[in-house]
Length: 297
Image 1 (cartoon, one colour):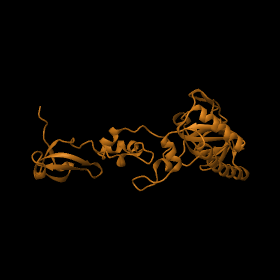
Image 2 (cartoon, one colour):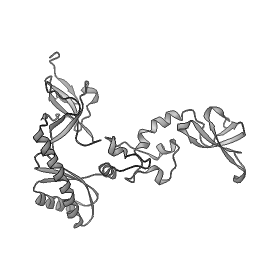
Image 3 (cartoon, rainbow, N blue to C red):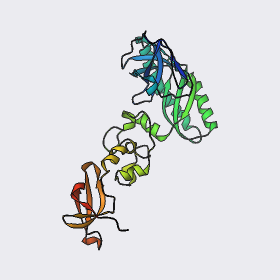
Image 4 (spheres, rainbow, N blue to C red):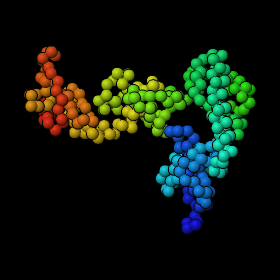
């Protein structure tokens, strides 16, 4: 088989008889890596049964990295990779569909039980292990350990399985609900974003976006995710722009930069730069068509 030596990455030993595959359990979900037998044919989009800490689950192969040491993102330091047990059979897929329907029932039951408890418990989604012996219920809101214990006990009794509750944030809730963003497109989190990045107000300012809450927040109530992954594009495109409030010389005289249109490569200039507001007019110019006045020391 060529190189017979094992490889080690982040404390994980990858035997020469194994290969690494990336598996996803939901659309736009996080990518997890598993060890599979080297001779197991796993083309992309193959459905497989894998071993997880939550129990055996069905997922879809999304990638087979050629250089695992460069792409494996470990979830637990120095923990061995879990295994791909087999390619999913027709029986596995039928059981998988039954568990998805059972998960929908679990959500309805959880909402019913949560409504009878004190606190603000909002049930987001549920997921069953392939054999139905355990379930993971995602919740959001404000609730204590007592309410959590009561809800877990009631769900375990009614659904006859072991139940784990996990508290998630508003972005995870929006990802599950999907829907449409202010741009009119399906929400990025439910369509292709596997991980959430840190988003800051500074990103919005550097993209010359209105600070109105309706323009910078998503349906989750947090800053829109696109501000983060589009930030570098805007930053590169605006590299040669004059700063806001800078004075520039135009074909209509001296003016002051009041806004940017980065994607069009234009700036909005107010002429004259000073004086009564009713006397000022705004014009659009290409960045290369104006000359920036030097700043006074």
